[in-house]
Length: 458
Ligand code: PLP
Image (cartoon, rainbow, N blue to C red; front, side, top):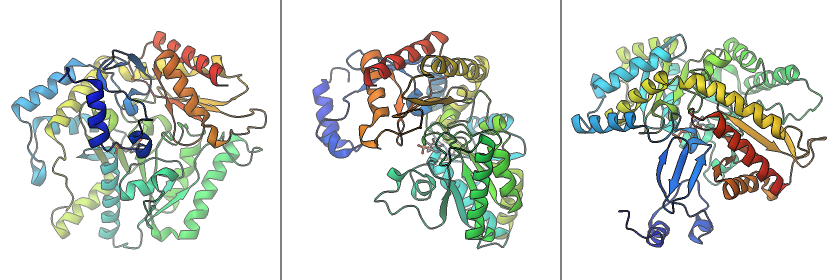
């Protein structure tokens, strides 16, 4: 296939390919980047023209172990040759899916009972919502159904998960959010409305807002709260100290379940195996996807806590088998990729590397740009780092949105230094989420490139 000409591919692309999260009209006019990725290794991807780019966002923060891992490729090929598919319905399993379920539970936070496998983060969160509704129906509380999410949270693109997502772009013109979903404020201390608040006061304010929302809706109508341990697509925002303890306190008092969406943070990105462990979160359900296979094959999961599991079992004694399953639940090829991926993470101690080199990247970025007049905030945790730009750091004035400063800086970073960072979809935020195998030298390259890009644009 390599003898296909680029212009041939481009015209097929324009004629046939409906791209996700893309400005369709701009793409049709040829205004989106024309890049066909051919191969990749470590933290570098390479396009068909031979350009080598440092992927400092690990795809969509998913290729956690880095590209080109032969161990995972071999495991996938072996599985495909031996058994490409069998379903997991009515108790069937494969060696790969059963082994992976044990490996996931061995690494999961305490009080977790089972893992349900899906395909991607969105369907895993759809599963979670259905399990929560089922749970409350079995408990005889059919009114307790609403889910609270946070503005700027990202939980997927389905009907319910697109609703849970608190970003305008994902609601606009899609008739979302659905009525069972409601939102509370994002735990973004930098963007707090009342600048006089200390971090502690801001945390108390977040808890009070949640409490007020529950009071308005009625606690007996609220089933669950969902949140990412570190707000991801909404701007890479680690929680202020004490945030999760304060939120959990409110939820416990009102008998509201907690879903930790660990699609980004699961399997090491914060420098701990799970963000829940990192921040002392005690969830009832955990969503996993990306890092489960490092995106070598699609696979996700809902890890169900002990409290819910008992009720789910009771429900099937009363109602028969649980009526929820995908053809590809626990797909053997995804499971084989997952087993090889988790083995590799252990063997290379990549969680520690994510913490150590990620910490280095964050401090180097702060040192290089912390005093820049147009840099309002530099924040991160483990292998997550964000730089937020402002028109004036003294009074924290934001740029006019039409200037798209974040997008401009990321475009310059790519153009000048062949480094991929991600302009986050809301606000002037440049995000980094490199593979865990990033070296200190590569981290230095990211920082130096960012400094140059910021100088060029600002
Ligand atoms: N949850 C979080 C926290 C995510 O970041 C994402 C994707 O970025 C999802 C859910 C949705 O996952 P997917 O795109 O695999 O459906």
